[in-house]
Image 1 (cartoon, one colour):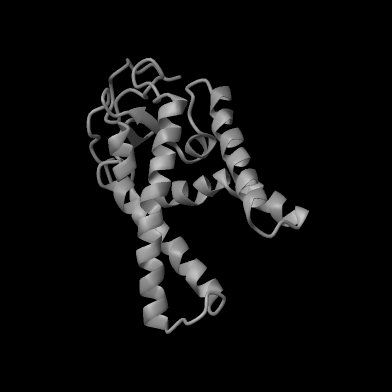
Image 2: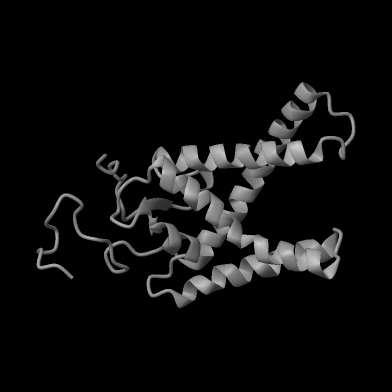
Length: 187
């Protein structure tokens, strides 16, 4: 650690769990569930627009294109909200804010990396379902639910209770009631 006094420097002090505590895991999971409800509507509208503009007449026709389009729509949704105040609608409702490791607003590049790494919530369970030959229905959804809960519980192993994709990309979730709207990082 450098000899700079706490609070000195352009970036300011790095946040600590006592200064900007992470919201409780229960609150973060509630925001996660609420986000899923909201995204259902976003994806329905986006999927409808895709099917109308491409002339898609059957669910399996152009499935890869639809999946790529919806992946991009989700990316735009999250990156835009995270770079404009650090909160999606669900995060606002549950008082959760995304900031960088120094408590500043998250830039587009970091938000995009976080979006990509956040798929770690689902990839292990989806890979297990694929390897087990599961094709859908309750078994895949059950496996996804278990995978999400296990991934969320892994945050309890981090000293500041952060999710591991946040640790990897230099972001953190903070209690929005205790953390002011962050300023953008200097360019």
